[in-house]
Image (cartoon, rainbow, N blue to C red; front, top):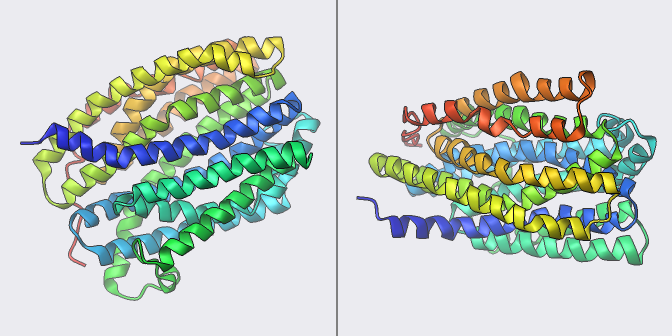
Length: 448
């Protein structure tokens, strides 16, 4: 019999540090937008569009970390620490590689990248300055996020939250100094991000040297030393590849929203930028719950507590609906405050108001789907369904319809924005039907 008080107590021990760290990370984008908004609307739009590169990079390392969660949570539940360390090595290998690729591309081809998102030369030039300066942060982020992922699984969520939060506070303080005191503008915001990431990595290295968390073995980054490691590597990609395709399919679809809005003018771009930041900040708890659900149910499945995991999944899914409703009410409450503090053109203010109204109901579907797809399903290795569902929803329905509305039918910006908020609700029936099949109730562990 599952004890709900203990279940939710265990959940929030994991969730609150994760959610707080997500919130603090979102505050960096918010501080960029708020401070650069005092300079001019073009700087705000440029930083937002350039920030889409970091979002795409996030899709990669999120997939690697989610794949890590699938296996490491179950092996941690089984108390197999050595295999957990091997999962970390595999995760770090690919997280660092992709981070290095992003660093090279943004360092040498920033203007080419910005032309994907905008046709306005001022925004392209400003965005290119940001990308060139921030380029080193991608490989640093690849390292820190991979290690944060394993810390959350291994009962060190509070410590990872502390490190990430301190880095965010430093980032915000440096933002102010470089943007206003040193008068570096958009380049200052980028430099602040790099320095904060260096701080984050140094803090993690100290933690590793003091052996407060699972050991990261550098030699396993390159070599596959034994058949057990090779089998683990194959298992990792078996569950991570669908997650990666899912993240890329979903994330590139969401990035297309910014591309569409970016071609509808600076007012639409600025309003969409602020609405996205508010939505991300408010969704921090929703995403934290999804991560916590994945870890808790994964641990249950690794201990072969299949029936308890099934009941816990149902309880968490119902809880996510209430969290989504509460988050929507928070967005509605924040709307007047956001409109008051942001210095936008009158037309951009109108766009922003209605985009925030849409965000208030969108987040309900986002909360539910995040908990089910990236939490419950992923805990049991059921990663392919989310990939198929998201790709079909976005690329077969929402993105084509949004492009037709914007570029062929020439519909108003608000109508286009409404179409781009339909994805979470279009896929709900399929998600519910798949959940009830209980294919995610599986113990994935092997004797290594």
